[in-house]
Image (cartoon, rainbow, N blue to C red; front, side, top):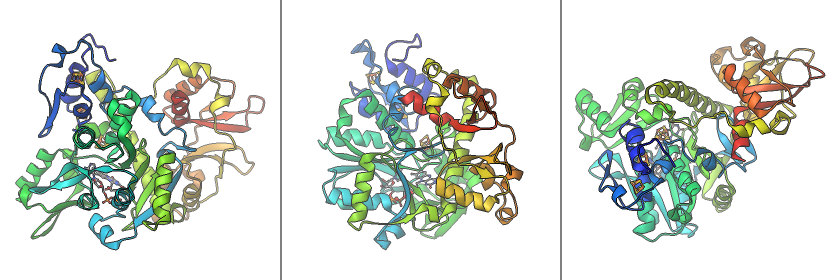
Length: 500
Ligand SMILES: Cc1cc2nc3c(=O)[nH]c(=O)nc-3n(C[C@H](O)[C@H](O)[C@H](O)COP(=O)(O)OP(=O)(O)OC[C@H]3O[C@@H](n4cnc5c(N)ncnc54)[C@H](O)[C@@H]3O)c2cc1C
Ligand code: SF4
Ligand code: SF4
Ligand code: SF4
């Protein structure tokens, strides 16, 4: 329970830290989870319908399950932590692949692979779930998402495509349980929506037993509806009712009856919600299945399968001819783009969060903090062994192909004697101009400063060395032979240790 001296009623903290500070993304989880029906989302605000402290002495729920509070984060991570691969950019997963709906008409409507729509339609038709939470378009304002409970395939088909404004999907989840009595629900949302549901699961909230599967979307951010629509009306003389659709590509495209208006991304960026600037999750790391774009491929989506439930469902859909699939290892550019986007989002969010910590006195993002648990574990127990290294004379082009095959983000670089002399990551390689990648060597772009630890040191020492050196990974060497590399520890390994 949060206690800031205010009271034991979580709403007081939620209001101060999240709602009034501008961090709410209108997911609706607090409305769905509130035991006294005290909260309601209306317009672009959460309002309190009555003072719950008159009925209760203590209630921790709304703050703890809000995706922007620091509560329950590690426990939420525990729901995906049994996946065999842990990747510092993409989180835990079992498999990553490219996929598209077999039906070309669906792909045309979605401007992507229409994987989410195809999976949901298949799930409803085969009664794998009894309903799905989707975001349709508001009829009188098509840019605005309308969170809905889809009961039949047509409801799902009418939600195809992305809407770039907040959708109160967790509130719709509450309606599916309370209003429609649904017991096997599929849920689709952006990473903070999925986190809200996972927090309810960690909290063991009574409505979460009705959740069958979560599909998370990749997300760079959502826009403030009123602020962006006003900007478009003022600058481009397009009324909200004239907007037929919106699409994000190299520009922000607004479709009207008279054609498509192109707005530079730099102009729309300032209308992104404040929470999105401190959000570290690009690929919906807590979903059963995550789906995002597959740029530069046009009508494909990237699918990251994280849990056993997600794996069983996707493989069933593939076996039944619902999806075409393709191996991502054959498309290194797609993998590179996703990993770089995820790492950039995290780096920017952490920078922004540090500044906000000074203003608000707390950090609104998932951050690894020093903990006693790390002091009792030796590095030997948690380090990754059998590390793949790359030679310093490998070209950047070959390195990028290597990354697409092996899926790790960073590798120690060795000299001609096989001794580690540096460290290179996908981020540095991706920043080399495309036409220079065949002639640039890994040795030219590697980081030369190696942060080193020994197997008998504790995980807490590893954490402190990472923090002092502002790095996310350290190399573990043999004390007896300082040139012998034994393993690598990353911040993701430390997080994993804490979830166990
Ligand atoms: C706000 C937002 C930002 C995104 N940013 C990126 C990005 O930077 N990079 C990237 O690769 N992909 C991003 N995506 C994901 C991408 O746009 C596609 O949604 C994803 O690739 C799935 O494509 P699909 O063709 O399989 O989905 P479809 O079959 O078209 O289905 C889309 C599903 O998304 C749901 N949906 C639509 N809008 C919302 C919303 N606002 N909130 C919750 N659910 C919604 C609908 O219910 C629908 O079921 C973003 C999506 C959203 C909503
Ligand atoms: S009763 Fe509702 S509004 Fe009040 S603290 Fe609990 S969840 Fe929040
Ligand atoms: S739970 Fe969702 S709707 Fe409620 S305050 Fe948090 S972000 Fe806003
Ligand atoms: S960027 Fe993060 S906080 Fe913003 S809408 Fe996407 S998942 Fe939510």
